Length: 501
Image (cartoon, rainbow, N blue to C red; front, side, top):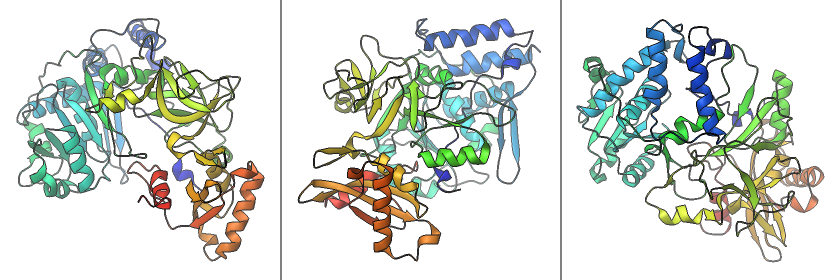
């Protein structure tokens, strides 16, 4: 099924259980109170609590209910690998293991509240144990994909000033290669069955660690984690989130789990209409597209029960007031293209990131008037649905026409010859800049005449979208430059065209 690898079905680890379990007769009052309390915060009907810690306020409360026999010991965590091996933990078991891990981080790792730790692991159970352990100790958790190179790891260690790094056998050599230049790194913790010189072994330490641990009392606004942005428009930036922005902020997008597939949600890169149509044909289910950033959690969404407009990101997600504004921060009329923005004055939404760490200029540059500017361009229609046009840096201005690359890419992907495409600006002596398409061909079209195929694709785009948007230049490539998160780096293509590579 062409291009479906772009699709991401999002599953959130700590989502509320299904309604039948939520309202079990023995605990329905407590659970109903917890759920309604956090949902009312999202709706801005209630003040954010002064203190919040997911480990103590959510996980441990569920554990207490299990221990008291007031709710069945259903799985809080269920992991299965490609070989069929599985790990299943109740809330009590996850709490037990995370308390032991918290003691490992405190001693012998020597980490304290506010210290930063980079965790680069594949999707293995230890990742979640360590995540919760950091929450318990007030240590700031910095996740990283296992596709990072030594250069990527060095950059993140230096930028974050992390005191500890946790990884596995695969990436440990890369860490060791940059270790001499990392003046802030003090401890290396390896998740491995065997030992490695200069590294503490997590599994061995976890076995002997005590299970008693007093959870740190964290304020809602205290830092909980740092994400490095994907770096699609520049060097990765550190996005700081608090205990409330993720611990509570995600409750709006985590509805409940189903026993079989009934509801599909996508995030990450916007989906081309063709992909949505193919998914509907193959599964019989619509895809409810959502939109968010590392800095924001969910900004817009097509929630269950909403009318879906194919290609739209949906409507604003509470507690955000989302608008399309001009470069001065003034709201534009519906139907006009502008900057997708979130109102931050007079009150800054609690689930918005705190800051770009060590980069106050960048933080300030995202605020225009009463709004946080996302850096994405879009349109809001008369019904309040948002439509993505492209990153502000990616917009192509050709002879006065503003052209978003996503619309051209969506047109190209409908042609059977196109497996993937990316669109960027290219210099032109008459028009200033023109649309150039970089195309990865589908296997069946690799032997076709490239000149004829380029003309065919140009004519195809003219028919599918406005004629002035067609790519005046077409280049066939074997692959597209992407970030470690899988996002296309249009900036790399644009810089190459303009001689800035």
